[in-house]
Amino acid sequence: MEFVEQRSAALFRTAYVLTGHREMAEDLLQEALERACRHWNRVAVADSPEAYVRRIVVNLANDRWRSLRRGGEHADVDLDARPDARDPYRAVEVRDELLQALHALPIGMRTVVVLRYLHDLDDLEIAETLGVSPGTVRSQLARGLAKLRARAAADTHPAALPHFGGAR
Image (cartoon, rainbow, N blue to C red):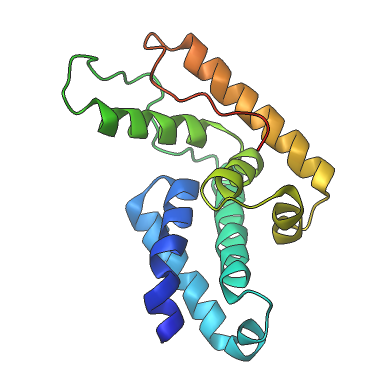
């Protein structure tokens, strides 16, 4: 299927950032693509088939997050692990720290931040994707960014996380 060949990498990135685990992201994407395939007639006539499938990915990630929380499980994210600042591979570690900080956010905030900064969606597009109001998107984004900034400020390595601007 041409759609899968062209868009699966972008959809995988979304799933990975939302889950934080390669295997979970692969499973999530596979399930999302399977659901999209079963209802391809509906997906194909959507204004943006990619946005339609992205919404499936986001909904599945939210469902899995809720079921993990209900079951008392927690994600395998060691928030206190700090890499050596002298390491020449610092860019990789900074990326990992950013992913860890994102995964410390509640799933709603994380989803809004990912859709804004990874997919460059505006408030209205995010609101439509998530089925919430644009005001809720702005609120979740502001709170999520504030938490990321607070984590960066508390970090012993101030340059560990980039400063995200509040405005686009």
